[in-house]
Length: 391
Image: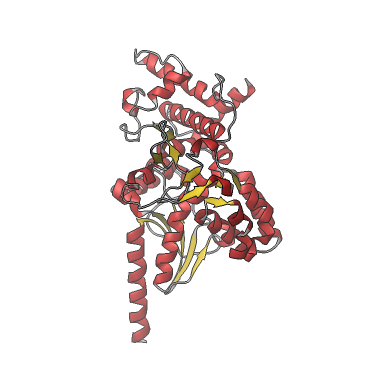
């Protein structure tokens, strides 16, 4: 019961004080779903003892449904079945979330579910393997090697699935990782046997992660919603033999390093192609990119949350760190987010500016989609050349 009391009180602490009861219910249910997925992936025995956040979320959901004279949700399995449906069909109340969204899509949690689970610090720490990242940070800091930290992140993003031989050879790719060799081995786990079909594992053609086979073991799907939408156009997937001993990046690192990191590295390449010097994850990941334009330094934090309102609440916790120093800061959202949600920047900006928090979008801190940010950079470069020529 002490754990239950802690979860309940946490839902009302400073991080969550602005949350409605409906949002707290969603937060608890999403947290339980993600923790359950993690247990399944780790091969832990799944029995009738459901995760505490799921039970708490069910209890509080039923209070809301009782107040609206709606039938009660009978059990956690019944709740998980409801999570496969649009929110409007089972959660009463008003939300700043698209009610057509779901928390589960087949066997996978949706990105909205993952974002909801990470609304507050303790859950994000639990899901993001924060203690592991702290050890990486401490090792690199003790060695005065921010380059090792940056190379470590880059390696994880580029190599979510590896053979045992590839993992052992990583130091040849990034010599700086020698001080992190043990931690790098710890970042990966054995590929789950239930993902294997005919002695082979199939990787996502979009992100490179392992794909899960369907029940008949005839089709494969990535855990990423975006990858599942893009799979038809993505091309041929990589297939690896199980006898090569396949390793897969741990769940928390996939969620918090690989998926946002792919957009970070893509933006880095686009800026390098423009001839701009780019510093990735400066000062041990104070923010994502630091770039120098004519007359100003820009800090960039790439964000890719499904819901702009949840993200706006999240960034209020610390804003963009002041060091290393910058003149302007940008929250940049991947191009895919614009295709999926064209109104995302406006919704994020309005929410930030209506909250009593640390982040106000406008003068020094701005928000833009990836292509719009690159166009701003190109414009700044042209203006810099014109001024230089006039001199």
